[in-house]
Structures are given as C-alpha cells and as structure tokens.
Length: 283
Image 1 (cartoon, rainbow, N blue to C red):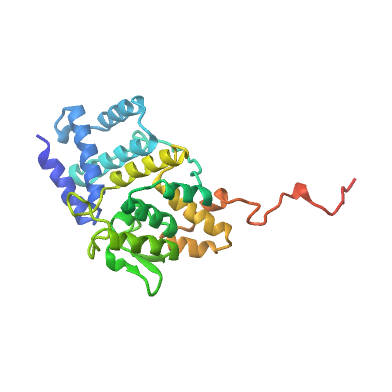
Image 2: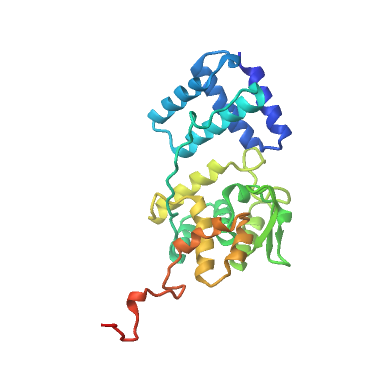
C-alpha cells in the first residue's frame, strides 16, 4: 500500500546524497507512521503528525529517537508529498545532554585484558588508541594502516569526510599479532567470520558488554566512551584542542570543547581562586 511512497523517499534522499543508514532510518520511521495513521498519504495533515508523535512521547521515546521521527516525516512531507510543514505545531523535543563516562588508563587496560577474543581486542584497542567511532573501526581495510607513517586512514566518516588519525605503537603490536594469527586479511581488516563482509556495530557492542562485565567495570560504558576517553586523555596530556578536533574528525570546534568538561582540571593545572596563596584577605 505504501511501497511507492517509501521508494520515493529513497529516491529523493539519494538525490541529496544522504547515507544509506539515513535512508533506512527515514523509510522505517515513515513506514511506521503511515501504518499507525492508516490513511492515504495525500490526505495527511499536521494534526495526524502531532497525534502520532504524541503517542510516541507517551510511549517514553527518547528525545533523540523522537526527533528522528520528526525529521523523517518532515522529509516525507517536504520532498515527497510537497505539503506544508508547521514547525510550531509539530515541535521537536528538547534533549538533555550528559557528560560521557571517561575511563582511566588503568580501566582501559583492564577492559582490553578482559577481551579474550583477539579480533575484538584489536578492534577495541584501535577505537581507544586512535579515537575512532565503532563504525569507522569495523570498516577499516588492511591498506588503511600505515606502519611507515604510523597513521590510520579513515574513510566515510560520520562527517562525510576522510581523515587521518594516529596509530599507536602498542596498538600496532596488537594489530600485527591479530593479522598473523587470523589468516592475514588483506581486504577488510576485521571481516565477519560468517559473511566475510564487514562486522556489524552490534556484534562489537555485544563483545564490549561481555568484556565490561568480565573486567568488573560500569555497565554504562559504551564504545563511544572509548573515543571520549582518547580525546580526554590527550587534552590532559596538553595536546592542543585543534589537533584533537582534527584527529576526531569534528567539523565544529564546539564538539571538541566537550573534553574541557571531562578533563581532570588538576592535571590541566587549573586551580580554584579559592585556593589562592597570597595571604591577602582584603579585610
């Protein structure tokens, strides 16, 4: 019933060079919206959207997912139905922002020591030591690792741009041992044992959760917290935020400023004015 409309979403998204993951998310959200409203798309109204989003809000949907539904249906209305969109009557949810969990150096070692599967140990050590997103790590190729320059080439990043990041000597040792032990892959660096294609993000996350449990660490830790820990540890070591921004692939410097909040201020040499030592009370 709605296949034609969903195909049109994919076409319009392709014309705008949106990623496959975005296209899948948009079509999935709009499909659920259409099935819930059970109306022909040509007669949909802003009130239909409001009612659907209200249901989602009452179901306890997180703001990020709620706003994905909003963006998906907005795209559908604007580029497929060519219908007006009233952002005042169809609001987006305010999001709460929380500081990420930052692992200590000792906790990073415990996590890696608790990862018994060599392939996943190599992936997690690469995520931390080079500041990668999980999707960037699973899409690495053998040729992306430069031993001579001690760099890793990152392609198709979230920001839609390629970049280079640093390659740790310790991580290179782990990668080398993994490579020789696991059939010397020359294409995809971390191929799936079953499909020989790319590993899924969820497969790495599942192994990470097991390693977290084995290491006795907080269950709140995610793969992205390894990336956050990389950046925070660099900032605490005195690395200029501009270099950290480049290594992480942030387009906006404000994204990198997050690590000013997660850094250990005493390591950065910042003291409270309350701890002045001049002895002047000005009384």
